Image 1 (cartoon, rainbow, N blue to C red):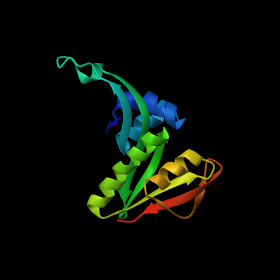
Image 2 (cartoon, rainbow, N blue to C red):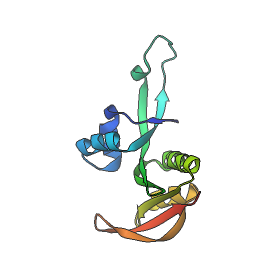
Image 3 (tube, rainbow, N blue to C red):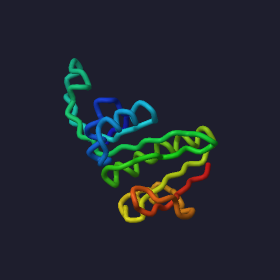
Length: 141
């Protein structure tokens, strides 16, 4: 699995994972820090551009920072990919001595498991999101 910054060309694949319109995801890629996890089957020819590699998107995470907190705004994909991707905003927050927060819908068992496996602690309920209750998770510096 390879983690990298998302680019606009990833919007369709991220949109499928996020169940969101591709144009909304394109804006997300421009407005937030977005990382993707991909399974790559690289061509071993050093003269071939990396864009020509066959990559499958396994997950994504988007985050931004304000008020001494890194907020994970969205994430999705396979559980393994989510666990690895959640480490990206955590690493950024640690370097800036900031707290990290994420909201997870109460019905999203795989996301809750990934967040807990990444070291986040449940700190209470969050706001309603798309008609669902959320749980607030936090990781302190």
